[in-house]
Amino acid sequence: MKDTARTDVVAGLTAAAVVAPKAMAYATIAGLPVQVGLYTAVVPMVVYAALGTSRPLSVSTTTTIAILSAAALGQVAPNGSPGELIAAVATLTVLVGVLLLLASAIRLGFVANFISEPVLTGFKSGIGLVIVVDQIPKLLGLHIDKAGFFRDVASIAGSLPSTHIATLLVAVTIILLIIAIEHYAPRAPAPLIAIGLGIGASAAFNLSEAGVATIGAVSGGLPSLVRPQVDLAFALWPAAAGIALMSFTESIAAARAFAAPGEPRPLPNRELFALGWANVAGGLFGTMPAGGGTTQTAVNRKAGARTQLATVVTAVLSLATLLVLAPIIGLMPQAVLAAVVIVYSVDLIQPAEFAAIRRIRRIEARWAFIAFAGVVLLGTLQGIIVAVIASLLGLAQQAYDPPVHVVGRKRGTDAFRPRSPQHPDDESWPGLLIVRIEGRAFFLNAQRIGDRISQLMEAAKPTVVVLDGRALIDLEYTALKMLIEAEERLRADGITLWVASLNPAVLKVIQQSSLGDTLGRERMFFNLQRAVAHYEQQLAAIRSSPGTTPERG
Image (cartoon, rainbow, N blue to C red):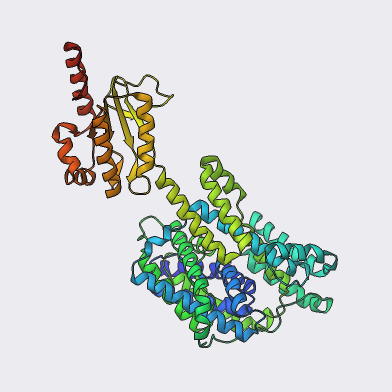
């Protein structure tokens, strides 16, 4: 027990060296005071530690949540004062928590898988690019009026002659420093070292006198209660829904990825509950929306975290940072935080992952690109809608066009498999067409399946069609009705339909319909071996009785 506690304390201290600097940097993405970021690394983290099911998950804010929060605040409090922004973000965070709690109450834990991995890759890549462009003016010591991605890029390009050289030198130095530390000393807390050196340089060389913008006064002290603004709730709830979805998606992915062998698996509905209360409590203390971060959870786990005590230690150290170091933090150049944000946001942009997706499944690469374009062209909040729609379209496309195979038998065995050029020696039988449908047959794809089978029949000219149901997991009423009608048409054309290898659910559907009576036991077979054996018997009978064909009336 003592060893576990000691390990957790060390892990918590290590994670705090990454969490606290990033939390401050992410607060600036949303235009919030840096102390709001530190508050987010305290209240939600402690609440989640008490209620969550993942042992290593570190809950504060993330790049994705920060940029989505920035977009939401820009809609309801453009050019708002720090006080107005804090009230607005408190309202947003409470709304996110309430939506997560509602999702938990109606058991929507399955939405953790609602956005496909290719779509999520595209969405996060778009988010990463938007964040980089958003932070570049701070690197260059410029100020631009933000008006959308492409206009911002044009404004930055037009303002390049006004670049503040001292600010640029500070930013480039910090970026190179972080990259070098991550490469040569990956276990070292690169963000903490970079920020510490940035503050030291600012104090030693009086960078503010040289025109390098600093954070300025930081309000220390414990977080205080903030009353959510009910009048903003209606305007903020769509953004809150998107942030809640991303918070849960990122959190459950990180929790699953870093669960150690033998640990309990994260429970999705309980995670919704824990994240919901973490955000509600955080919002009441003026924090940003919170969720589990992959990077900080990885640091926590690699440092040896075994229980949520590690994240409590991280929260305590983050609070201590604010209480003790607030005056020093105010000396930090804004370019230093922007450099930290950019270095860790670039990781979200994954061209290699796009290439891998395209190499394996081109259609899914298209969905990834659509999600990416949705964020860049329409904005981050609208990009979530595009990402969800792209995931649904991808699901619909796969459901609409399920695989339909012509099946043969591997020669010399009882193994049946789809016929292909790789297996030209597989057995087939004159007049017999065996068709295998994979997946569900339902209203969306029933006509498509029927068309595919009709094309196969045109080519094969069978007298008997066997529907192999071993991979057919469901037969919905619309598809059943079309199958009944197809059997009637086939019978009128002198072609007989058999079924084989049906799973119990599909078999029950057919038996309870008129098709069950039509087929009878004579045309429903336990497996393909029996169906083929029966057909071979009929072929033998035909050879001994010329002029007849299998099952023709």
